[in-house]
View 1 (cartoon, rainbow, N blue to C red):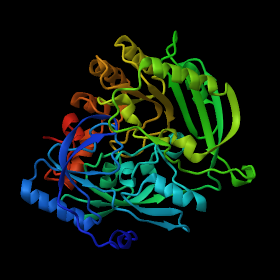
View 2: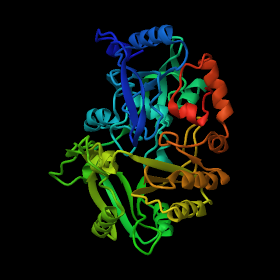
View 3: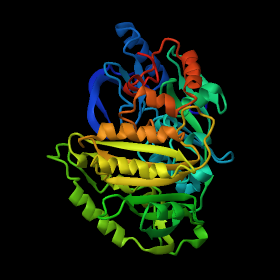
View 4: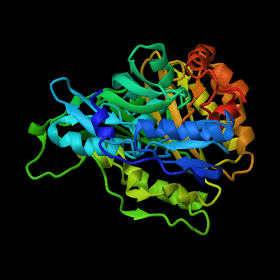
Length: 464
């Protein structure tokens, strides 16, 4: 295994587990668990065995990367949490166009190394601060799903630590490989992955922009010809309308088309950090409404071929560290759904449910998806995905989202587990028709049910 020398070159042992309260990226109460930071697969296996001897099978164990899942997917109350961020190192195989990276390596670190020498990670989400292991566990998608699929679609093999301490090499297409893509860390600990790269010749994108007045206009603009990285920012607080939008379609810019002297990067640097003890929520309807008005008016009504660095276009929120603290102590819930093509009215149904409940949405993003892959729990399917950031403290939020779940499930849609913080077991069963297929593979890989999370227990992904 090419990464073995990299992960074992440092001689460290895992420290004793320490009690830590872990939260999702969206905030909330979190959960107190036992955290350990092994730097090698052997140390991770030893920590798991020591915890099992001390505590038995219950309450179980879970891997955690950068902690960027929005809800409770990377926490386990009372359980052992294996921090994978020290599983580092990467090795480029240029002739094959692949990179083998440790589970703890972030996509930002890969981009910083690879783009200057002509390679791009084919699929990146809206933040560069996602680990390779987390990208696989959530089978993340980007703005280019219609042409590139999910992150897992470009993984050719991966290393997995089972609950028995065995290290497996899983090739793409293996049933356990597919169960691990989007499997939320419940099949084992992802140790490393070999990723197929895309060639690029510059760190720039050519971006087309359209400003539209309603949801139908956003859908039409996303269908229009243009680059593969496609997204619509929706303003849902504009007076007198249900939505207006700024739509961008971007494609990689060849080096031959980059103006002389242009400087850009595939990553971004943080410019500020929201203080940990922020006194109260900054984000309120009036302030967000004013910001949205400014953003909408500053965006061009129609622009073609605007040159932007990859980093600033792909990761705009990364310039502000810890931005969820702007929501105050309660945090926020991100509700991300997908519905098939032809079910566009459900998007408006969801927005109507939130308006009736007087739940304000402070950030909304709409994208188009291509065909689903072979992984049973992978989120994307051919259709439209809508992501909504909602204040957790909003009265009536839970009931409103339960009604939204019914609309989404009725047309064969689903909610993204990496973002979820409140989905019920019955809704999970309705949205993921291959759930039992996934459980059968998972149970064979983990017959004692060691791998668990608060998300898995809450939704019934695994039994208590």
